[in-house]
Image (cartoon, rainbow, N blue to C red; front, side, top):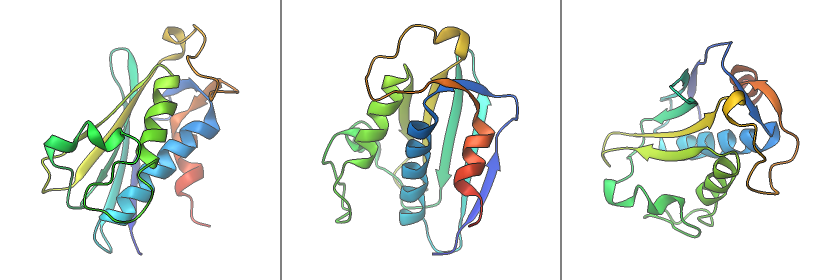
Length: 154
């Protein structure tokens, strides 16, 4: 499927994360965006600073997620009307983001695409130990470099 990626992430947005796990989250969100968006559409990846967090958003032009399903899409084995997949990807993403003391969610009216987002605390706010053994090596990383590694052409 042919898609266009638009990546807009400030170079100075730094987070303390397990890079492999955050790549896993981004890959899952991008895979879902590709799966549900129409052929030849644009997928947007934005990141920006917020008060206590670095925020990452993945926008697509797919059918969207009905507001009644916004919480449920992050539950294990939940599959809206989609027959593909095991219904585990977003649940895994939620576990990874929460293990980084972050927040994950979706904004969508259910008709005009979706914006899946996650928020990661800045390094100075994330000094306490992470809440899950799934987070291994935590170093400071530029979000832009992580996104580039994922979206670079092969």
